[in-house]
Image 1 (cartoon, rainbow, N blue to C red):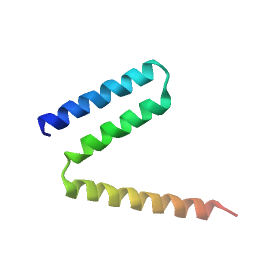
Image 2 (cartoon, rainbow, N blue to C red):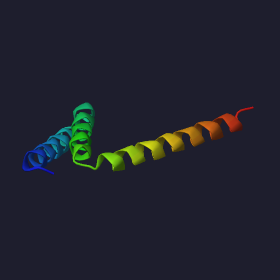
Image 3 (cartoon, helix red, strand yellow):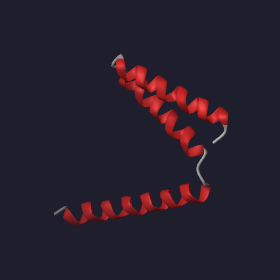
Image 4 (cartoon, helix red, strand yellow):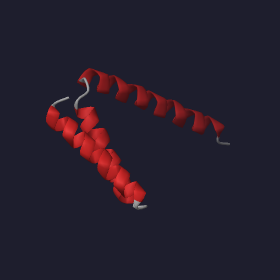
Length: 71
């Protein structure tokens, strides 16, 4: 992670904590989303792809299980 990314990550965390402290859920969610995007930008693209595929497979399994439970 570059120093600029680290600074942006820390600022997003500060923004999220401040929003949580004042009870602003929408701003806190946005700041945590920004935090996650900055964090993910520093990750290995192949790792992100593998995680996305695993999540998609899990979603398909859950949808199939839900469908099987319906009358």
